[in-house]
Amino acid sequence: MILKKLCIWLLIFALWIPGITVSAEGGEKASENQVAADVQAPHALLMEVSTGTVLMAKAADEKLHPASVTKIMTMLLILEAIEDGKIALSDVVTVSEHAASMGGSQVYLEAFEQQTVDTMLKCIAVASANDACVAMAEHISGSEGDFVKQMNARAAELGMTNTHFANCCGLDDDNHLTTARDVALMSREILLNHPQIHEYCTIWMENIIHTTARGSFEFGLSNTNKLIKQYEYATGLKTGYTSVAGFCVSASAKKDNIELVAVIMGGADSKSRFQDAITLLNSGFACCSLYQDVNRVALEDLPVVGGTQEFVPLEYAESFSYVSTDGSNLSEVKRALDLPEALEAPVTEGTSVGRIVYLLNEKEIGSSPIITAASVEKAGFGDYLLKTMQIFLL
Image (tube, rainbow, N blue to C red; front, side, top):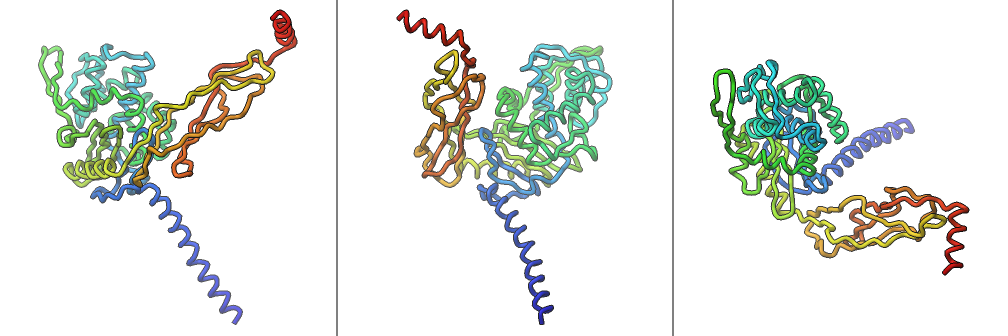
């Protein structure tokens, strides 16, 4: 009898454990699927750009072949190299024999042909040119292999934990894999910090000039992202296709003050990937409202005890944005400063000393760090003596 009861309890316990796991997974999915939108593609993710809030995810962490969506990282590194002063848009790039030999999507660059960085960016963003990608990789890093190492290092910095790049253009390779979530992360980075990308990926058609040993002739670029014409809020970003990867797109769009990116991976055909992206974007715009603290509370200087200065100025470390999908009245967001009464010297510039807290319906929805805007050294005997003399002289 005792043995029978023990078996029953063991059976109940065994059934209960999977239930906890399913419940935990369901909770996580519910938190990311704030937008109720059905898409045909097996993998998808919708993200609000300013906050990085995931609004919808469908099998978003499964490793996949990304095809030419890879080029988002390539373009990100190009724009970062420009920002860092390593290269300029006007720089002339000489095409190597290796770059000219690239198959797949290309603009038929010839060996030893020269084009500017600006033109190469257009070829990549508009025509998804593999040859232009490799030429730029070699121009920046010396070789495609070294550039790919840089791509993987940047992916790690962005938290793209399920990504490994094997080339700079997206050709199928067993070791060239990413996820819908990771694509959204690199898309957010380029959209948030390099908005000039829109100048390139919203070009619908444009001609470039090939100048080779055979003479000069025009070549037409046509945007592979048909959403630029089909969807009024479209701002980019990149398509991709191979027979292994299926039809992919990272589609960015902006309406009013809300910017979204919809990632579709493994679509059955070109039309359905664009329709899936539109479905996600429309659903996101329909339910999202964005709060941005643009008129921030003025920060008073904070007293410093035992320092060469009696006060230290403060500043906000970063901006603050919050996305709501539940219809909350964001005009009711309240702010509260959480700061100490004083600091003790020495104080180092950039030290986090408190935060501004944002509340909605008495619930904290986020915060932003407050840091010191200057350094204050610890006062010594000479400082105290000088201060005493100044008091007497007054």
